[in-house]
Amino acid sequence: MAEASFRVGLRRSSLQGLRIVAVCALVMCFLGNLQGQASSQDQRPLGRVELMARLALPGPTDELQKLIEQRGLAFQPTETDVSSFKSAGADDALMSAIQKASAGEAGATSPTPQTAIETAVFQHLASGAEFGRKLDSQHAADEFRAALKDDPNNALIHLDLAMVLTRVEGEDASIAELREATRLEPTLAEAHLELGFTLRFRGDLRGAIAQYREALQADTHYEAARLQLGPTLEAARDLQSAISVYQEGTRLEPENWVYHFLLGGALEKSGDQGDAIKEEREAARLKPDKSAPHFMLARIMRETGEVQNAEQEMQLAREIQAKRGGLYRIRIGGQVMVAKLISKIQPEYPKKAKNKRVEGLVRIQAVIGPDGYVQEMKVISGDPLLVKAATDAVQRWVYEPTLLNGEPIEVVTEVDINFSLFR
Image (spheres, rainbow, N blue to C red):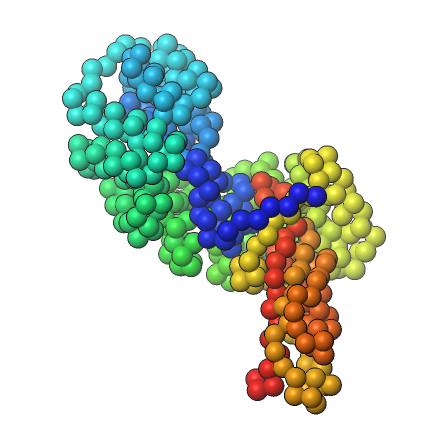
């Protein structure tokens, strides 16, 4: 069994990596790419500056490749352009899409002249993107700011700058750039999404929800925004609105297993186990190589008393994970896991401890299984008279399952139970 730990609060492990927000770990595994996720309403061919500005955003390039195929190019790349795109992080597949578009199968078929300002902006963006790839956020920010001096109303460049400012100047500076980007281009869905990420991380659920809704208003098919809006609504305890968001996702993309999976989880929380099982079965049908729906089915069936069926689903889930290298385990802080508690049983104060006026903290290391149930416990500290009451209670706690790269994982965390005679 693999085990890893991460520092809760590390929002971006690298400029090109996945965002990790532990309190929203349920769906972050499905996201992480901003490059090509422009509003579907914008069908203009991509210009030289826009293409470089999108390439400078973090994430893999597959969505940007699709965007080039959909919209084409408004320019004929020069040899210098090609070299700059490669230095900025364009992989072979993206370069192939650029070359195909420039050959006349999409977009421009003849060279287009560049103004001096466009050339300067392009060069600053290319340098910023290259610095970003090297995780040199300060120099990347300097280059993006230089680009903005020549093109101050370019919302995408403000977004580029916001993405690196978090590392060098903090989130307030990043938020200011994101707000400027959305002011300049209210339909820039990526900027609303990133602003929602940032506000969610800071605990501003209402602000995050508003930004995710703005992103969806700009593009009703924006999957990344919907997959953030639903769980954030759940965190805000607006379960019915979250269910509506997932249902809309299944209507727009009936073959997307993630929507069915999340809808099943939300329905389970609402007490509708019957429909929850239907949604999880559909998720399993659509994505037979994913163990997540089977773990969720095992969990729901366990709650409804279908013990034998639950065991079968659990076995199937573990077989799927075994084929993928086994069950992964991460370590998450106790305060973060508190936010993922679904059912918390309060311990009974032991009569003997109360008679002897014994009080204090019991600290337990717990392993949360992929179905959200506590499967292992180890007492770290605490008075022996209080330990059994604490472990009996924690053993019955239930958490939201935690996913990593779309697969349920085990979580190692610490639980503190405080016994006080004066509460």
